Structure formats: structure tokens, C-alpha cells
Image 1: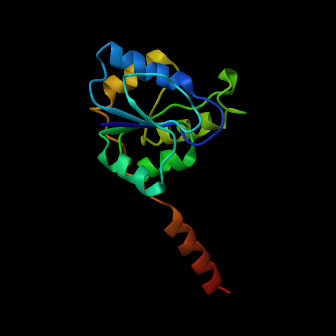
Image 2: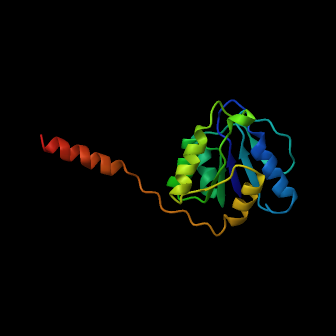
Length: 159
């Protein structure tokens, strides 16, 4: 199963769902696809759409998915990265009315540079990412939280 999350932002993100429809119709995606669509309305017979889900259900979808396709929201991406999931990040873009600005580009590019996710900005890039996802091995995510705690602790001890 492939899990797709569009997040909960109140602007539509039909572009990504159109890409998925096309890949299913071309026979490139053969697995079941489940989409958490939020406020995006999309008519299709190719995959299951749920509007919103609880955090527990979301975790279950991530755990069961062979890979996750996510908008460029930090929470959605980091859930998959922390779980070591194969992921494709597709940022919502302001020029298509999918968001107010393009901050999601910075998020997906940072994670891509670290070898944690694949990214796509258009149909051809998305198709290529889907075709490469099976061989893609994301790097292990390492939280820097403990480093910061140790630094603060050492500083306090030095006082």
C-alpha cells in the first residue's frame, strides 16, 4: 500500500492527486493507494480518499505503507523520516495556489540533501521518483536533541 498525505492546509492540492491518477492509469503504480486529502476534493475511482484522520490512524498508515508520498509539511515529512520510511516529498507551490508561499521547497530540499527523502516538483520528476523508490535507501535520521541537551548541561556545569 502507498500512503499519500496532503496535510490539513485549507488550499487544494489536486496537482499531486492528478499525478497519482495518471501513474495508476499508465500501470506504473500497481499497489493500493490511500490518500489523506484534507480539504482537497478530487473525484477518482483509482484510489481511496479520506479527508482527515487521527494521529494514531496516521501512524498506522505510515507503518503499513511500502512508501509515503507527502506534501512538504514538516510534521508529515518528519513522521516518515523518523520511522525510516521511503518517502517522496512534493511541496505545495504558491504559483499553483496550493499555499501562500514556497517555504515547503526549503523543507523538502533540506531533507533531500541529507539523503532522507526523494523530491518531485512536476509530473516527470514524480514519475521518476516513483520508479526509483524501490531501490532508494533513506539515510538513518539522527536527532540533534541530545547534542543540544549535552551542550546546555555542560554550560550549566561550567558556571
